Image (cartoon, rainbow, N blue to C red; front, side):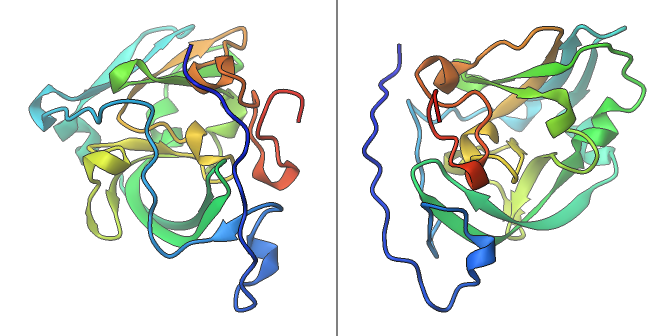
Length: 202
């Protein structure tokens, strides 16, 4: 069982920041904090692949070259960490999850995201579709650093950032909801920053 502690402390809000962009309990940072539960995986590009499997008509796998040959999107979003920092206007490039799900037949309603290091997290499938999520490999115009989840991470900006799994390697579509790594450790099952859903019971 990974460690779970409350006690994240906030900071005063900045008067130069639009409060409509900062969820309750958050403060804005200029840097990009690194938070990990274990050692940073460093997967060579030629050994990386991404798979959609589970409750699907047929599993699909992309190599790094195949992922990069798909239509790419560059997008700018605000991100919010459960430890209370918010970073505004982050710029990413990657592949929309919608693109990866094209042609995938499924009746699943949930997704278990899996990543190097044994990390998993769970989301409703609808939170990854309709332009809400990407597999990102570039941050601020540069290849995504391993410390921030490189070579690729999931980005789901409307949820707390632990749902944007670093070092992502695939999606397992499931009929039933299956809590992941941090959710089993006490974090909220959904993680909406605007409702401060940090922990079970919030």
